[in-house]
Each structure stands twice: as structure tokens, then as C-alpha cells.
Image (cartoon, rainbow, N blue to C red; front, side):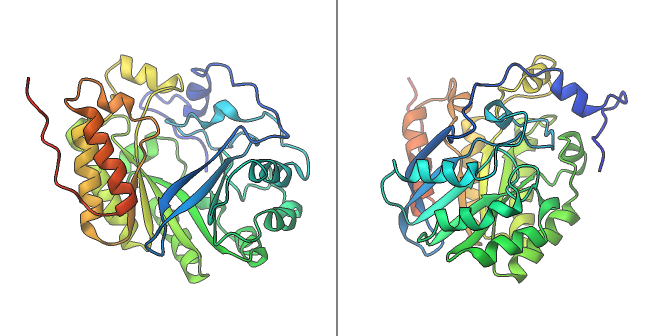
Length: 316
């Protein structure tokens, strides 16, 4: 599927690439970050989950909002590098029950992780209860199932749904249809793989109120097609393209009120786990009353998966 074009016929790949700054310097033999943090697991318990941010080749899909390219290489990493990165991280992390292997792109992209490396990677994560990888829906197929068969753990796949707004999805340059997302989800579930969907809250071209409405619709769609977990991502700037859109009035981050409303809605459905990404929430908290207490509520709800009464800001 080719890159999308905007209303003037401009190729979005070229437009997005033309607004980028330099990449960060990364070591192709080391993950660029790794950590362990608690997460509400599918079994209903809060358990330690390791996340290894693998240094890998840049994703071939140029999504409008993506900033993950900053910590990628221009060329594929060497054979065996990914398993070595995982071992490097796990040697330095405390014990965990679950592991996320996030490679700033698509685990099942053969140009990023060759299938010949799957066995060594599976051996490196042996002993975990759950292994979570990320992929574009269009890359779900034989390689995905081959890796699943090598694991002694349950496999979950995280896929970017982003939004079900038909026009905005195209303008995000996602190069995916909702039908493709649904087919990939059904294939994964048929083969015993759980699905986590990333949902953007207020992507470009939407007002704050529209962002809330379409995030709710996106959560509805995700659960309707068989997704087990939705991760709501407040859309942020930081990649050049988003700053230009903001300057011309086509993008602003969601308000903290909107983050709270969408998270409350998703959890209230009781259809599956829902998380809200708080790693870079500062853009949504700017100017918000009692922001620290409200973010702490969201953090507790991530862990308990229970809606708490909404915090009422103190008026000065």
C-alpha cells in the first residue's frame, strides 16, 4: 500500500521525513532502554513486567505521529544482535513475570528481525509467563505463528489501531484499513494469541471534544473485534511533523480532562484491560488544576483497573 497524500497531493512519506531532526546515537549491540515496572496482568494480579526497548532498524511505515524513529538504526542490526540485547537487559534487571520486546517498529518485519534469529530470541525469554511484541497489522501471518510456536510462554501482540476516524486514519499515513486490523486480530485470537491495541487520544485534525468521541469509538471497535487490552496514548508532539501541524492549528495535545474521561469510559466498559500512557503526560497537564493528584489517580487506576471517583480540582 503506497504512502498517503494530503489534500494538495503531497506525498506524506516525503513530507514527514522532511520535517525530522537528527536521530539519537544508539549502539546496535545494546537496547537503548530497559526497565521493570508493575502492570495489571491478564490474570488479574499486579505483577512485575520488564520492557526492553530494542535498538533496531527503522520501521518502514512512516506514521505521521511517530517519534520512535529517533532511537533506530538506518540499516538492519547484525544477526544475533536482538537476542544479545535482550540478554544484556535481563542480566541487569530485577526478576519479572512478563516481558515486552518493543523494537520501535515491527517484530515480524524480516528486514528488522530475521526469522533465523527467532529461536535464539525465544531461548533468551524462556521462563517468562508472557512475551509481548509489537507489529503492524499487515505483518501478522506465518512468521508470527512460527515465533509463537517457539515460545514456552503465552504470546501477546500489540498493534496500533490509532483511530477509527476514517479520514484521520488515512491522514496518519498508517497504511492500514480497519478491515485489515480486524482480520489480523481474528487470526491472532484464532491461534491463541491475545491482542493489545494502541489507541490515540486526539490525533491531528480533531478538536479536544472530537478526540474524546473518536477515542471512545476506537475503544469500542477494538473490544468488538476481539482485542483484550487497549492502551490509550495521549498524542504528543516531538517529531517535527507534529510541531508544524500544531503551528498551523491542526494539532494540540488532549487536555487532562479528556484523558480522564476516555480512561474512565474504557475501564467502565469492563470488556478488557485498559491502560492510559502516563510516560509523557506533561503536555496534557499544562495549566490543569491539581494535576499531580489527578495523574496519581490515573496511575492507581492503571494498576487496579477500577474507576475511582473523579478528582475535583481545588479552586483558588
